[in-house]
Image (cartoon, rainbow, N blue to C red; front, top):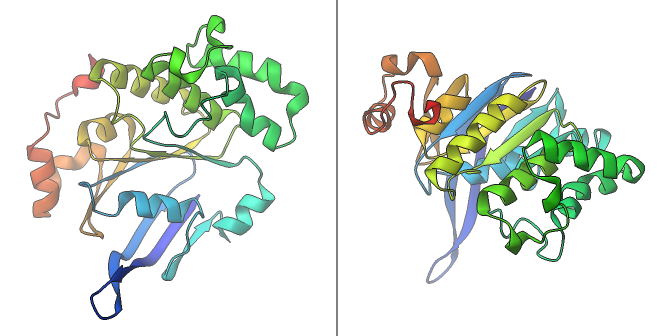
Amino acid sequence: MIEVTNVCKSYDKDGFWRTEKQQVLHGINISVPAGASVGLVGESGSGKSTLGRLMLGLEQTDSGRILMQGQPVKQWRKKHAGGMSVVFQDYTTSVNPAYTIADIIREPLIACGRSKEADVTVAKLMDRVSLSPKLAKHLPHEVSGGQLQRACIARAIATSPAFVLFDEAISSLDVSVQARILKLLQELKGDMTYFFIAHDLQAVTYLCDNIYFLHKGRIVEQSASSDLAQVSSEYAKRLIGSAILFQSRWAG
């Protein structure tokens, strides 16, 4: 589905006498097969969100390439309107505060020229993510964080995308709400391909088949979620050692 090959990324860093470059990503290689759920784990500042923006085509790489079904991401997106979507960490700033819940979910449908079917689709999506129809006319500040994030998820899948990127999509929610959101995402997987960025290894293990460990801008380990006991890098071992990985707290 999407292939990241030897990707590097840096940003300008102002020095006292001259502008310098700060390297954020170093030679990243990641493969996300169609229909798979792949996770990326790393601490804050490791470059996770930067990689996410590159994969979405929101920023350009310094070197290397990112291909979606064999095509550059921006080129693929132009040919497949609504085929790629994202759920961000901060659900409060990722929605228009003047939009109702129904408006939020309807937004990508209108953008893709599907306004005629929007009302019916919105109702179905609200049911799919367990949002009461009574919330359709509520504004973001009138619903809970979990409800608003479910609306964001409904928005992300409204156009039946082939690829969905979750950038720390549950980290700002209470643990009990996180568990419900993860179960929802597990149920919604279907034909979609997931790329799940998080710092919480338990959440990634629950949802993903394969996991990449990112440390200081480098992939230091790749492992199937069922083989985490076999990792070799010290960083991956440390993250695993700090987590409780029997069926995980998400399983209840």
